[in-house]
Each structure stands twice: as C-alpha cells, then as structure tokens.
Image (cartoon, helix red, strand yellow):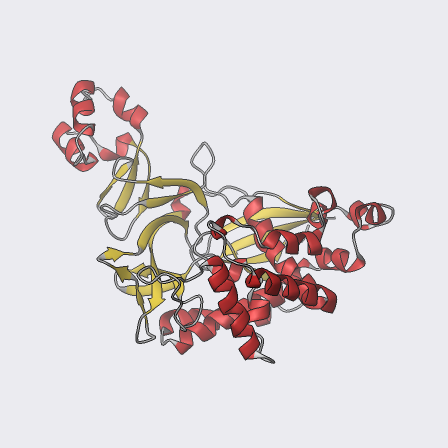
Length: 391
C-alpha cells in the first residue's frame, strides 16, 4: 500500500546538513545573509587573486570589507541569500540540508525516525509484557556503575531489538518505506535565532548565558506554512504469512504499522501536553500559547488520517526518547522520579559543570530550544502537519 501525503510546516523546521557556516562562508547585509560562491568570486574580473589570498589569511577577514574595497556586487558573487533578522556576527549558522542545486527538502529518514519513536512508544505502552521488560531493563541499567564514556553507550538498542526485532533483517520497520519530500524554493528558507532557555536558580525560564557565553545559534530553517509532499509505502507482503513467521513479526506490530496516523496522533498529543504544561508552569506564555493551539489542532485531527509530528534539530530530549513513559507515571510519581534521577546519574544527564556528580532537583530536562526574534520568544522548532492526499 502506497499513500501520498502533504507536509505543512506549522513552526520553523531545521534539518541540518551536518555543516556549520561562519563569516568565511558568507556575510550579512541589508537584512539578508549571503552565502558566498567562491567560484563566482574567482571568476569575477575585479578579483585580484593575490590580494584575496592575502586578505583571507587574516584572522579578521570579512567579506563585507573585501567586497566594499573591491567594488564588487554582493548579489553577483553569492550562491543564494536568505532573510536574516540580525547579523550572525561570530555565531555559527547551522546549514540546512539541500540538493546539489540548493533546493531545500526533508529527508525520508528524518520523517521515518520520528515515526519510529512514536511506534516504539505505542508498542511498549500497548503491551504489559513489553512495558515491564523495558522498565526492568532501565532499572537494571540505572543500577550499573557509570562508565568512563557513558554518553557513547546505546541503551535504546536492546529496547528497540525487543520491540522491533532482534536484527535489521527482522526489524518491523522494514515494512515501512518513507520517501524524501519534494524540494522547495529557497524563498521558503530563512535564518532564525535559536536560544537555549533554561530554569535558573529561582526556577524561572530565561535565556541561557554561562560565563558570558550566550547559548544561541543561527539556523537555516524552513519557514512556517510551507507545503511539501512525500509518500509512505507499507509492504503488506512482509506483514502476512509466511513472511511474518519467518521474520518473527507479530500481529500487534503489523497493526501499529498500518495505523500510523492514530499512533502518531496519541504519542504527539502526549508530548504537546507535557510541553504546554512546562511552558505554562514556568510562565513562558508566548510558547505555551502555541502549544495550546497545537493541542486544539491535534484534537481536531482525530480519526481523519492526519497527524502532527515534531521533527529535526532542536526538538528536545522528550521528543526523541521513551523515558517519559516511565518518568511521568502519575500512579507512582515518587518511583518515576527516582528512576529518572538514577538514569541521570548513570548517563550524567544534567550534571553540574562546576560541581561534578551534583544534580539539582529542578525539573529534567530543564532546558528547551526556542526561536527568538530580538528579545521576544516566537516559536518552538520542528512542528509539522501531515495529511493524506487523495488520488
């Protein structure tokens, strides 16, 4: 079964290429950031190669100064330019993934990764056996002594093997194929400012500044209200006998794959509720109001085949892990918080930089990434609406 979907961005989305850009790669002018095309610079008749080489060898090299001195037109020497609310100055810019023709898109792997997390939540939550086994595994893991490089461990791997299949050949996600989205025009891309906000000693949310270092970064991001399409294919042959017997696939796995919209709907709804509560509790109304709207939208999508997802960079710890299933237990909140603290100590999550092995009792995670315009918080990152397109 193959279904085509429309993806609409609700808040800015950053899908990184893995590269960061600096003042060597471009410059800011008149409310835009220009990505310099070095080939165009070298081919330009006004370019003095020796002078340019000497200039670029200087630590304080800036394209703005060089182009002004040479009298060159910035727009003629750039690969592209994007709206940018302020000069990045010395702050790096996270580059968005694009095709070789500088066309932004969203990889299928990004979408499938978010769907995979939702399916993991659903399959654990729907089975008492899976829930108990996962909880026991987390408790055993938390009781172990921290390793020298605990951050390099992969505690999710045995959980995923238990839920999805013990090896890649027997992974139920083999039955799900997600295409890349269509490309979009560069005019739908912009540069935004993402700040890390954190709970301070007075338990108030504020922009994180530590030892005069501002925890902010600029991102090339897809603007809200952009529309792209992609396809999702379910390989029904793998979900029927004799393949299910050979691959050890269960009926519940097949049902979850076939009912992706409903699965993503409830998992995403749970995440939205937690984020709305966090920003409301800590008096951050600008972002809490956005989550209010997302909650209402999610409710309207019930049963219609459409669903919300949070994808890409800056979406946070809770959106990419299953630990909230066990650490937000309203039936036994003390045990849930004890497990969370044990896991934090085991993997050094939120450890104090100034006092090793010190973990404060503020809510974890106590940080979020929020987009700002000037000093005003404007949006969380990564929210999209996905709707089936009728043939």
